[in-house]
Image (cartoon, rainbow, N blue to C red; front, side, top):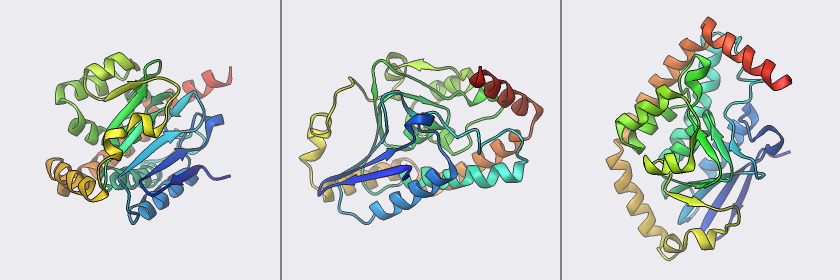
Length: 251
């Protein structure tokens, strides 16, 4: 089964994370499919790209613990984390605007994927959180680096250190969420002002934005984040936190 679904027409494309039974958790297969899909869509004449999740419960719950398990050494962790870092970098530097359409909660790496998108629209009933700090690690796909570019630095630092799930109202207030939405939505209803622009306009707007984000240094700083997280991965604190989380899920 495809873990990333691609829907496209003459104006936009939608990528859907397709593991609803796993809260759309990211596997190695999903990482590969996401990377290939984003690269292929870069060549299309689009106005914007939407990333969303399958089902009605979660956008993405982060990395699949069966593969992102706590017993990996730093080198193993780095290889897996860096693959998703490359996905996030390609998403962040996509040539036209990108939207994370958060159909449910986003947790850990799910928030990193959403932060790699230019804009975030999320369910007003859902919650969102960079919870990696509660697992003895930090964001490891480059999402922490991107967060500092998306919202005010003190808000970013507090959220990363607090490592708690925030309501839609809270993340809207700090500027991470751009629009609160309800369950029933359509692209035409959500993005009319983007649809009435040309793809050429959108590419110019995005290039201006990328210059503001200091894209030349972005990849290097995201790589540093991956390295720091991979070193923490083999810590006793992380291993114990993952064991407790896995045991809690089995109850």
